[in-house]
Image 1 (tube, rainbow, N blue to C red):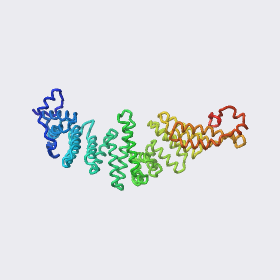
Image 2: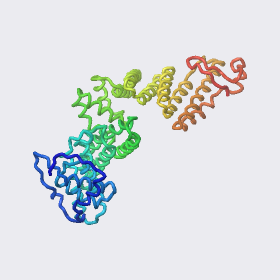
Image 3: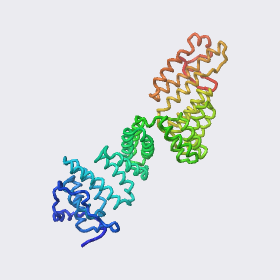
Image 4: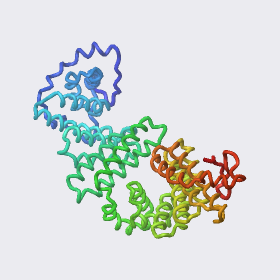
Length: 472
């Protein structure tokens, strides 16, 4: 009896019945890939009882890792009723891989390699509309199969499949597909750096964005793996040479000019430049400025801030960072908020000499990082505050005032000590400042000359600083 679209149900009683199925032929029998039965394009093959029996047989064999035994019943189903069950393709990939590894015969290896690719094409034909594993997902599997079975010989074909898969699947892509897209694109770039740089940049941006989103999703079970692989692809891109700022300018200068009203393209270019730290580029500035006019974002505001600073307009730079901070807060991008706050603090201290303003921004950055549970990054903020204190003259330059002005160094060194305590990444710099500014503390003789000001073990540094410090 022939039945169409029969669902496979494996029953306990099926095991003895499987013994009635015909015995598998030896695996080494050469069955060309093209030997799979041709089917009518307009109608799915009929699923027979024998198909159902063979699905059960090869599935049980695969579960027990008996791949040689699984081969013939799998081949029968694959050839005659390839629409019977998705396990034809999931199990089939395991069978083909195992047999490929087990043989040393070049002809057999080539046959199985061809079969591995054909298997994914046929899966697309019969199960390409599957809601969970659609055509785009299967293309990723096909790209991986090209790499597994052909390696360098099929890099271009593999990259084409992987790229198409990631373009469609986006953040839902398999981590391995995302990583291999960058790997194979980098390999192709090394073969032809003059013509493959833009391709590598595009592939890295696409895959890197998806990995970053996966890593940031606390509900994603693969978030930790995605984070590690994001670091890996970042390193690959960094060492590739394609990330050279001048190379990016060659590729994207005309793209910016041609897309001054295309917000998506401008934002994409600006993010890429920021990711590879090419934020001093005129092309980056142009993209950010054009994007900011169309729709202000924290990325575009930060880009405009960098542009203003490069031109020496530090007031405008801080204003733009204020915009970036507000916009990033709306999107809850707190790590970016902390960076923008620090940058504003730096310009206020280093260029505008607005020390109270610099401290305000630095303290805000510390608070933001604290809310994220991050110590790294706080050290640089404490150093900024310490430098602001050290640069301050609170009192007139008379004999008494010159001594009292030295008290700011106590408060400054307090901040440098705090910096190295909370953030080991700045320990060397903080230690250097501690050594340098400790030399300017009021001496014992100077404190003796002003007994009323220095009675006790603590001292209040007044003015805008307004902090109590320890006398030493």
